[in-house]
Image (cartoon, rainbow, N blue to C red):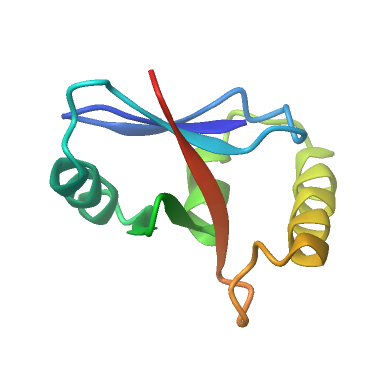
Length: 101
C-alpha cells in the first residue's frame, strides 16, 4: 500500500498490499507543496526525509474499498512498524519513506 500525492489529491493506492508502505510524490513537487497537500487532506506531515502518515487517515482512505479482513492485515502491518520503531509513541502516525513518482 502507498499514499499517492498529487497537486490536487492524496489517495491510498494498493490498500491490500501490507508489505511495502510508502508515500509517492511527483518529481516536480516541492517539499512545501508536499507538506501542504498532506495537511490539506489531513493525511500527515513531513518528518525529515520521511512522512508521518496518520493511521486514521489510512483507515479513512481505505474505507469502502477493502474487504472485511483488511483491518486485521493493517493491524499486522502496524505491529510490524511498531517493532521497527516506525510508529509514533501514541501509535497515531506511521513513518513512511518518500519515493519520487
